[in-house]
Amino acid sequence: MSTIPSATGGTATAPDSAQAPARALRRLWRRQLPAYPAPLARYSGLTIVVLSTIVLYYALYIQYGVGTSIMAEFHMSFLYFVWMSVIGNAVGAIASLVAGLADRWGRANLVVYGLLVVGALMLTLPYAPDKGTYLALFEGIYFVEGLVLVATPALIRDFSPQLGRAGAMGFWTMGPVVGSLVVTVVTSATLDSTSWRDQLRFAGFATLAVFLLALFGLRELSPRLRDQLMVSVRDRALIEARARRQPAVHATSGHWRQMLRPDIVGSAFAISVYLLLYYSAVGNLVIYYSTVFGYTEQRANALANWYWASNAIALVLVGVLSDKLGVRKPFMLVGAVGSIVVTSLFALAATDKGTGYYHFAALFVGIGVCAGLTYAPWMASFTETVERRNPAATATGLAVWAWLLRVVVTVSAACVPVVVTSVTPLVEHGAEVQAAAGTAAPAQRVISEHPALFAELEKYPAGEVPAGLQARALKEVGAADLALVREAGPALGTLRLHGAEVAQAADQGPGQWQTWWWVCVGGQAVFLPLMFLMHGRWSPRRARQDAEDHRRSVERELSLLESSGDRGAVE
Image 1: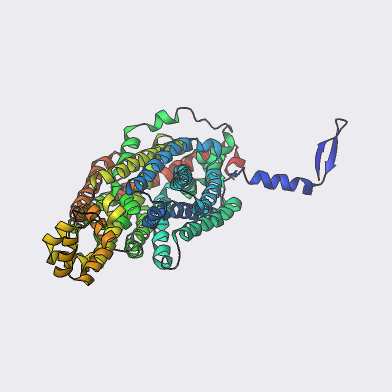
Image 2 (image 1 turned 30 degrees about the horizontal axis):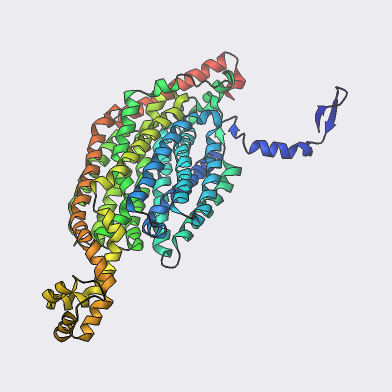
């Protein structure tokens, strides 16, 4: 039973069951935990966050897996398709700054209700009547992704002490990577029997399924808990004791000033340009292999599976090993150098159309492993660098990173059609010209045998050829071959209109793409010196000593609390 105010100013009793629906509704918004969760609850929360990230990136990336079909459906130019990504990433950059307020709104709520919005948009997109509507709807997905790019790693950081941070961040980073893998696995397995609309629906239903899981299962730490530095799970008692002793007010003033420092901004920019190859793989790999090597959408997506699968495995294994040794920078250094070497080999193969499928697959495995060596330790080191400034400003620090990441993605997406000018004619007219070439081949053989005659015939519109010239054509070529040339007229027109442009683009394309791949190598090279700005040890021995010193410090503080009589604070 519970008490409620009566009409006379006293109190009356009401059954608790009457308040149960209200409590349940509040629980769907108020998700804060008053104490650090037990291991099972913590791992469940981490799993939901990772699943949420996977389906959100699956939804975001699916359009690139079926990009050529979408462009054909809405009669989009390649430039229009690229600018959808450019505008979307700019929208995502704005959203990332907005998500710096995640501490105020609730990190978990951003994820939960972001899933709902994205699921609804993905189920609406197949019914878009035109490319303008499609563009507007898809930008909404980019906005939510910008919010989630801040909220989900913030939740991972909250639930993972520093001594397990790299492994946890490795699992989180599997979100974008496994999202990409899901795209390529699903499309390579089902695209021969489904349409691009079905692919978008698959992603929408998957997103709504995880939304229901997150709606009832995802929680977050209260500000008093998450705003503290947690090195080991053994710190739990002290962190909870401090949380009970400090005011409930969560201050956010000064966070942006604290986060706009060289170590944070520099390292965020470093990883943003390091990932240039990743952005290109997500957005352009299908287009690259279809225009340069003639792969179908299915075959190109199947090739990408090698990249995403090896990257996902490496992220987790390297993260666990980094935690075991207690260091981040050695892994980042090896991964960055390895990335430069393997990506350079990939760039060198870009102009050789004889390069085989499994040659590329081996290169993608190497690229994926090296990216895993770099990225999982970097994410752990970045959050630790932020914590060194102010643990309470984690969301703000991640907002700085996410904003810079989106700015770099936006600029790189805009630069691809500038560097690779051959893509536009190949995407817009390549298939048309190829089909026309097949249709017109017999007619071209006839024309090549009588070039002077057909040069004369082309001077006159159909039906206005002089009788003498018609008689000469019948005598020299024959009625059957003339009819063959006449029937191939539309195909010959297509070849005259676009054939030379497409041929030139096909010749220039490999070299232009190679230039872009070298730009990606340059981004990886920029990462190397900037990684030295980050916090963290190089020596596992020194890292173990730091952990031991921290353990002793925690024990001393707990002893002081017990000796002061505040026994309840540490129980």
